[in-house]
Structures are given as C-alpha cells and as structure tokens.
Image (cartoon, rainbow, N blue to C red; front, side, top):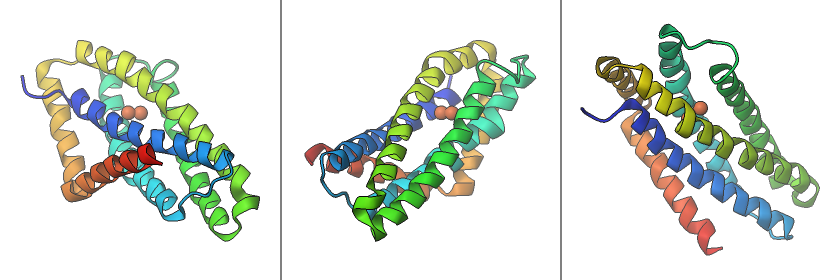
Length: 186
Ligand SMILES: [Fe+2]
Ligand SMILES: [Fe+2]
C-alpha cells in the first residue's frame, strides 16, 4: 500500500516539534536575561499560522476528523472534541505570540514576561497534543479506515498541499530545520 495519510501528518508533527523546541530554547534564554531575535519570533508566528494551522490542522479538521465521524467516532468528547479544542487554543496562542512579539520589539523588558508566558503555554500545549494524535488518534484511524478510504483521504491531503503550494510547504520545512540548528548552537 502507498503511504498512509497519517504518515504525512506524523511527518508534519516532526517539523512542528522542531519549532516548538526552538520556542522552549527562546523562552529559557529570555528567562536568563538574554535578548531574542524579533525576526526569528516573527518567523515562528508565520510557521505556526501557515504550516501548523492552515496546512496541518486544516487537513485534520477539514478531512480527517469528519472522515472519522462518518465512520462512527463521536464528534463530542474524546478524542475529537478535545483535539479540536486544542487547535482553537493553539490559534489563540499564535495570535498572542504575534501580539507579544510586536510588544517585545517596541518595549523589550516590559513585554518580556508576557512573551515568555505565551512561549511556555505553546510548549506545554503542542507536545501533548501531538502525542495524543501520534499514539491514539492515528493508530485508531489506521484501524478504522480501509485502504481505499485511506487513499481517498491521502488524495484530499494532496489537494490541500497544492492549494497552499508545495514550495510554501518546503520553505517552512527548511525554516524548521534552520531554526532547530540555530537554537541548538545558541
Ligand atoms: Fe491536531
Ligand atoms: Fe496534528
């Protein structure tokens, strides 16, 4: 069988984790009294908006979750309602990260606390969310969906990729790798 749609989502999780790891390093640097690069923070906001939310959560919310609901997985409660609520929380945090980054750029020390708090909230939310999907949702998906249904889902995911632009997707993958490299050295 060709690649499973959950493989594509899992691979995207690995890039999101790299960026979340960079956020943790930046939060720690700020707490230690160091300055962090505003352009890097803006890049993280852009990555979380486009790659993590529009592309990745987009595939999950528009196609994976409804497919599972169609197969009898309850729309309320665990796991779908919880995961959807976490996507909403993630969206709120990205908005906050954008605002606190702007404030930090204008007034470093005063805005620092709110920025650190936001980075910490994100680094608490995402690893747990990703864990639930990798170890609970995706194995469940592969058990529930037939090969044909998985192929249909894969085709829909490919359409999302095309609508966003494969070059855009690859640009964000490179950005995540560069960010990981940069924060590892600092
Ligand atoms: Fe998700
Ligand atoms: Fe996910």
